[in-house]
Length: 247
Image (cartoon, one colour):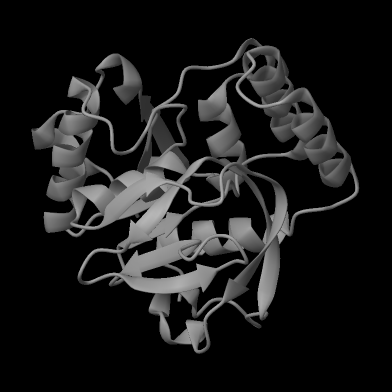
């Protein structure tokens, strides 16, 4: 049997903390979504490094990371990334987008994204699932689909409108589109299933230290994070089942 092969499209550069503690964002994704007997590659799309179009068929699935950049931006690499996502969609390759990746999938495939109306969303948030989530074949491997699950989130942008073929799969108090899918090969998740709490706490500190968010707001967010736990195993099961076609 051919080994399964996946690629991470990195839309963010490694922070010093993540590099030192976790080996870099690529290692974070592989630790979260990888299994033995698989091959994982990465492409730093934020630095203009893209997979060759004639090599795309070698991959079983792709993961598009979060990013400090805006999914509605017009930087050259973002425009090229939109073209790549459209190509992967046409090839019916499985693509999982998280945070920025979720938003850019929507944009590239005809949806609308922009600044979150409610401002920054930071913490461990309760995400509510739509009824009949089990109808999606990619989630047939789940024994039980709960009404909601907690997920790490840190974003100031959001999906305003899913693509024409998209279906909203989850929502929250402040975010109308927490998860969406197109068929069995496109999945976007606004939160960060791959993150651990220490990564989130370090990110909050960086936002405070760069005056991106108010210190008081950031300190309160850290307190709430300390007091909560994401349903990480559940979210990883969703992501791995989707990427690997579990039935």
